[in-house]
Image (spheres, one colour):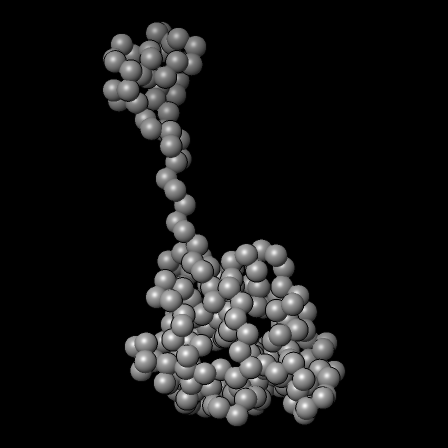
Length: 201
């Protein structure tokens, strides 16, 4: 916001001179520094894209990452991991935020869901939370990482419900149809997480 001295013209108006030039004081005394405050730095988002490209819907995260817009890619560091392990989370820096992207079982095929990362690390009451399609349960990887770091990195997950995970299979019809929505959800979450301070998960 710009502050204006003497916003209305007075009898001594000099045609737009600044206060330092026109009020008789030495230059610089009482002058307003026009240099704007630097914008808060955006946070780096580490995207852990999980999946096996040759196993049907397990490739959904990898396919979605390939379609991300340039703005999302500039704000993120993409790391591919076939199966999420504790090391993947331990390597997320203290000043970074994490976004886990994966296919999931236990939710409607093609449905895109989002939630805080810590919700995957503990059992939830009521309906089951989505589970990774990989052999190593995601809650175990998150639990070990929380011990090794210590604590989980700040962040969230975006998952898409899958139904077909056989070797050599292609994306199922529901996942293929929902891929644009999956890409949009990932891009929006990267933007949200990248915001300084109040944008944190």
